[in-house]
Image (cartoon, rainbow, N blue to C red):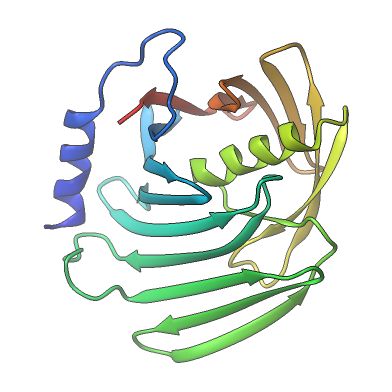
Amino acid sequence: MKSTFLLSAALLIVPGIVAGQQCEHAATYVTAFGTDTISIDHQTFLGDTVTGSLLGRGGPTQWSLIRYRALMERDGLVRSMSLSIWPAAADSIGAPIQVTELTFGPRTMVAVVRDARRGVQSQVDSVVPGTMPYMDNAPFFTAALVRRGLALRADPVDVPMLWLFTRGTREVMTIVRQGADSLMLRTPRMQLSAKVSDGRLLSSWRGDSVAITRVGCG
């Protein structure tokens, strides 16, 4: 199945969200810039594991597919994560062009990248305890930051953050509660407002008109 076909299928199967609906086992998020959809992320939850498929837009008609699997701690930390990437219009049943394995220790993040053209590369980044991985326009990572912030219970709380695929760029995300179901997440380079429901991300938006919305529980 081509990843471009997966986009059409994803849009067709997304059910309407019902007010107050509890997404205990799965959730689908759409990221939009204004009226343009830039990613669709379908997640399933089983115990401490989150498995997902992210369709991301790289141009007007180009979409890539990332399938990921993350092992989470009870306190919201990401213990390890794998990401398999297929380029736009590639056959997602075939082998991915890149597989990245991430492992977080108390003070290090180890990344092993298997690339179809470049072979195997590895990188070790020094991190402070409690560091969370992050990618822009990928709902899983925003949802994981929200989960981590809620688990820590402090208000405000600073969460160290490592931008993936940026050669080790680090920032601190400050999370501030703004009522029972609202959060503000900010770093020196961006600010997000978020709504939560049943302890999970419901929606988020930022000043440049990028918005993430949970559109279904399946």
